[in-house]
Image 1 (tube, rainbow, N blue to C red):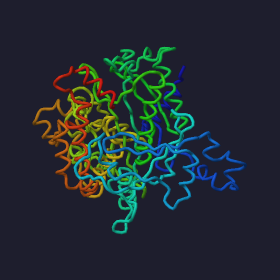
Image 2 (image 1 turned 45 degrees about the vertical axis):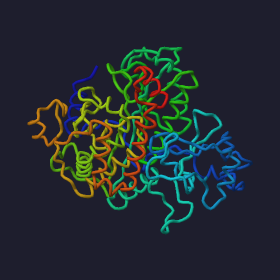
Image 3 (image 1 turned 180 degrees about the vertical axis):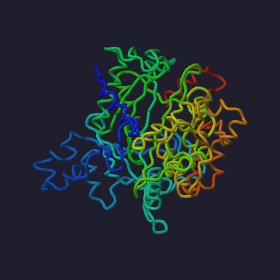
Length: 513
């Protein structure tokens, strides 16, 4: 029983100090969870302190027999070359450790080559040893991402601007060096488990959001989620929690924040883990944006926090209690350019069946709100400066994470660099769509997001500032690949044909994503 004195002390404490909430993360305190370079290189230096005796400190000492050299293409498909560890170590002795891959690698969609790509030339996919991690879903395997480089210098440069990892790394470096700003990014990954995908999709349950019934002891779903958690831990990825979502067979895993490049790597690995563990148990996992018209879709909600490196940022003029100046300018950049980067975040025609007004998916207006679940950008932990972040809801699991983060960070960079004023007011209790036209105008909510993939591509092409930061060639070639990914080629896999049923089209969609 609480005494009167204790009650008085608690009341005084609450009245004299800010009410903070959440775990404090900072760029200097997070860890990517990858394997240390010293461990990887121990085999090449057997007398080093790390290696000790024999190969105990090397990849082989960790039980690794194969190394997957991975990359994510512009259509968000993960590819790999599986190397034996012996060959991996031979390549490490080269001046540029990596493998050669045809330049069309970033412009081919199944068997179709996108406009602007050709059959000649090779890149070198150079190992990024800072990205090596164990494959918890595949015992005996480790994975490493790489950077595409020119085989021979062009204009004195080896970097390939079209490489999604290279481009994101460049933008992050620019923000750190020129704007003295760093970012942390965390993801919520929603997916649906299916017991069968052919001849029709079937979910294992329909228990609803955060229900304990969705984790009944002895069920395949519980085994899958537990093994996903164990596999992510083996891979060094921080899993904060998992729970059931609202659609039949739908679940969510929440992973901790990392710097943007490392966060994108971890997300790609998390998705591979989900797919593979589900397959191991005879199930099929899908990131398809929306399977059921009468239920929720699956998103990849993206949380971004802004961290100035030169000390704390002063309170913003318009929102001094909830936003710093850096955060306000970052948000202003998002509000100005979110319509343009939707093409990266929602790359499929089906993506727009999830992004509807009134269903808590982010809606169709460029707007924000304090702890608001039905706006495109949600301000979370607004009164907890150490844990405050922006949740971008208009992203789904079919999007390439490197491109999405390049787009979002570019918008934020523009806001901070150009010192944009946040002229869009928060939505309050109502969503952007729920406001009248006059009310939206009063709050500065004037930009609607693209409502289909064709409009999204055009909006991206027309945004000169985003094009300058991300690279005009990158934008043009992404649009070309995205077009090739639709009606003529990949469209045959994901768009309903005249001679088939809707169920058959959905089956092909979940097999692809």
